Amino acid sequence: MAEVRVERTEDGFEAVNARGARVAVGTGDAEGVFTPVELLLAALGGCELVTVEPLTAQRGHRMARLAATVQADKVATSRLGTITITYDVELPEGDEKAADVLAAVAKRVHEGYCTVGNALKEEMKVDQVV
Image (cartoon, rainbow, N blue to C red; front, side, top):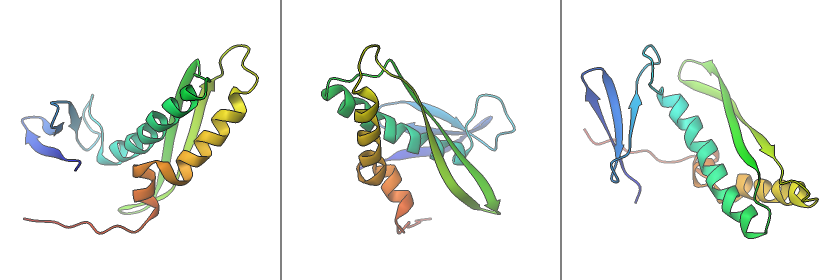
């Protein structure tokens, strides 16, 4: 089970996981905070990269740099349009197969191995208990 607690603080909100990691959450008006939408985008990008990294490395192709920019436009109140993930990669020097391996692995991850991506693609039930 995945679980995060979000609570109000003196200067906004904070998300805390069971391991004690913390991230400031807010409306975007204050410095040093993520908006909830930015956290969603970060979760998607993080999910893809932390899944792609070990799979490419296991195949002997560790990227010199592996990053991604995740973007989405707000198309209506409380609605995002298409989310785009753009990879920023530096291939390992002298590794002629790395680009093909990365492309194949990233495609498989995007299509089915990323839990966050799968959650965003499928209609999910979200319950609320007050």
